[in-house]
Structures are given as structure tokens and as C-alpha cells.
Image (cartoon, rainbow, N blue to C red; front, side, top):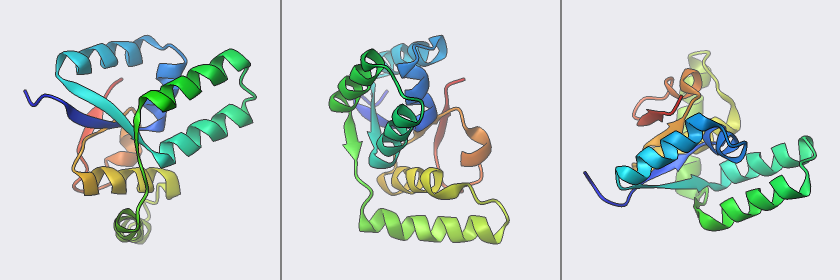
Length: 137
């Protein structure tokens, strides 16, 4: 077991975690046992804030979001990630398999950093070669 091995949490996972879903809680405990720690991306953070405002979260849930974000390492979307994003998205679009900006950007960060992606959105992320996926549902 590699201790302190990061795993990138995508929006699905963190949304479920914030909602208190059992699958997300169980996965979190399993990762702790495995010596992994959860990190995320600026793309996921932006999607979480979009969801907060779109669904008009109450103060308590908004505070929980703020606490979660401040406790996580958040990887930025850099120029190098943007280059990888462009390559991946062009390949997906050419194949008729586009998954949109956010998921492609999250995947590009995971690939460039060589970290697995924790997600339930297998349908989208399985389309990307070279992406390590850890399914939590």
C-alpha cells in the first residue's frame, strides 16, 4: 500500500459526500484505511458552487461546503492541463463522444498529475484513454 497516495474526487463524489450519502461516507473510510487522501480540482469546486447557487442551498449546507473546500487540497487548472484538455476533447469530439468542458478538464488534471479519479460517472470518464478511475457506487 502506498501511503498518502492522492485520489482526485470529482463533482459527483463530493456532492454525494456533502449530501451525507452512505456510499460516499463508506468510500471515504475505505480510502483512509488504504492510506489515500482526497484532493479535488478548481473545476470541481466551481461546479459545486454552481450547484449551491442554482439550488439555493441553505446556510448550513453552504457552511459545510466552505469547510470541505478549505480542508481539501485543490489542484488548479494550469496551462499544461489546458493543453491536455484540448487534445482529449478534440479526440472525444472527433469520435462523437464529447463529455463537455468540466469532465474533460477534470480528467486532464488527473491524467497530467497521474492520480486516479474517484467518480460514479463511469459512462463519461471511461471514454478517456489513460485515465485511472476508481468507482465509488
